[in-house]
Image (cartoon, rainbow, N blue to C red; front, side, top):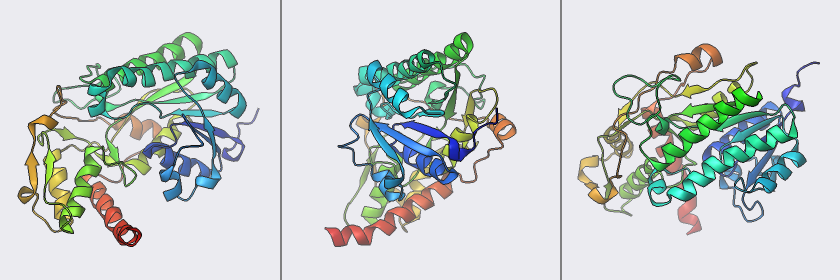
Length: 333
């Protein structure tokens, strides 16, 4: 049998309302896929990411609760997808300390419901599962690879690590075509301000316009690998095109401190960050990953994927997008 072309394929994106869901939907629509997206209440959802990318009317939206097996099974049966991208669940590391049960259930129960639904349907669906570099915890000075031992330090990381092993177990025990993308931090203008990167960018722009005086942040010494989200969704898709699915670390391979990120954002609007940033001990997490480093060789070799944008580029593009929005925002006000 001839493998289906993208125009013959249907992709189901769980969590299409988020940053990654919107960019992935755009990528798949451009490839010719029929795209179905889910959220807990599709009728009430705003889907601003889809709107901003100009594809709101090019995707079909369905309501689905991943923590409800019946709801999950019915949507899979109705949409009959060739590929599923599980991007749903509570996505904030910081919030996971305040909502550990919600975080665990939304990620772990959601993943097991998808796997069980696929197993019961008995169709050759391919499943991408969103992992996270938070699963590694403090991996030391060695860059984290697909073989690195998982030592998560947050409720979010623990939940993601659990879903990672769920995927591996169903792949081995039942032959389910599933894999986890272990993505390091990836940002874009679609990030909400509850994420520290967009909080920093937004504050720098407001301070430059005289609308805000200072920015409170926690530990600026932490180091992360920050990439550009529109590139990372390409890697997600490529993972599901392999004959035999496997897990991959997706990152730029470059690590920078949060202080460097802050400095770049303020410099982009002509400001010295040290005049405006205030350290607030209350914003420091109970446990924190000191340094995130990635070994990206396997993705380069097996997926032919390499990040083109690193942290300085990401900051510049986020600031440019934020500044471009301001005239329209002021006219609307």
